[in-house]
Image (cartoon, rainbow, N blue to C red):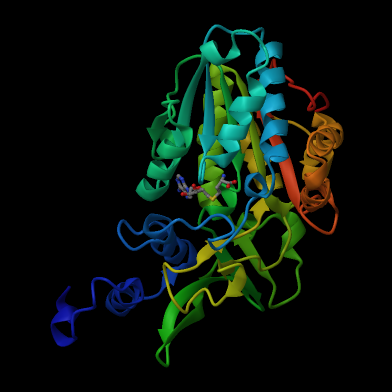
Length: 370
Ligand code: SAH
């Protein structure tokens, strides 16, 4: 780039400097571009640098809270395989398996029905080489296949059962802000030495914004999860063609709405998303209505959305907690606290939702209603 000749070259080890150099050279970037650089830059992105999940890391996910979470998903997988007619082959696919904890619990709990483990091939969708290594070690001697993105899931093959916990919230979003003349995109720029938002000059065509959001008050923010929708289109097309279901668990909203849910977390605390690119986890709430809509367009059936509390209750988490407490009375208090954390309305119980996407002819328990 010609302008680079007039400035000191950026420090190639500093993602912030690289991003600033790009903005200085070619102008402000969308929030999605900023998030993608921060999370997935090939050498300095957040998920490529370190091991972020767990008590020692930046954030804790449900499978890291308690084994009961993965066990309930294992029960879903087992019941699903049985109601698919116990096919001789099926692929169990996990999107964004983190440290592999969820899958370990799922495999243990799904091993009940005879022939299931023999029929199963494991496919892990993971973009981070660091986490791929962590997963390989956690799951040994089981040997899964890995692929980098949802688009690498084979379009042909046996039925699929897909699970994804806190995967979609990690995908980049764009944000738009309502002004008197319409919706302007929030772009990441550098003003007075610090990174921050500015508004684009142009406005979005009105019809792009969901009807429910159009009449929001001036200053309102609306988020577009293009990457999440694209991933869902691919996933839904695979399920429509191959058969089976996908279980998507994440925090988010049931219907499109205005609001700013973009956040940065480091060491279990909210952080400034612009202060240290690549050092904090960046996420946004998932728009389940938008995901269900695109899944339907891609030929799959979105089942009625459940809260995490409803899903876990239907899968039998309460009796499971009783069994665990009885078996280890000294851990009964902890089991009780974990159950509360996963299911209470003021904790993960209602903020987290469960969306099940299925092929047309398949309604796995507990998603029997449309
Ligand atoms: N499911 C795990 C981890 C959630 S963190 C748990 O519940 O503990 C998000 C996971 O998604 C990480 O494994 C991360 O590396 C992966 N990931 C994030 N963006 C991705 C992308 N675009 N493609 C593939 N994997 C991605």
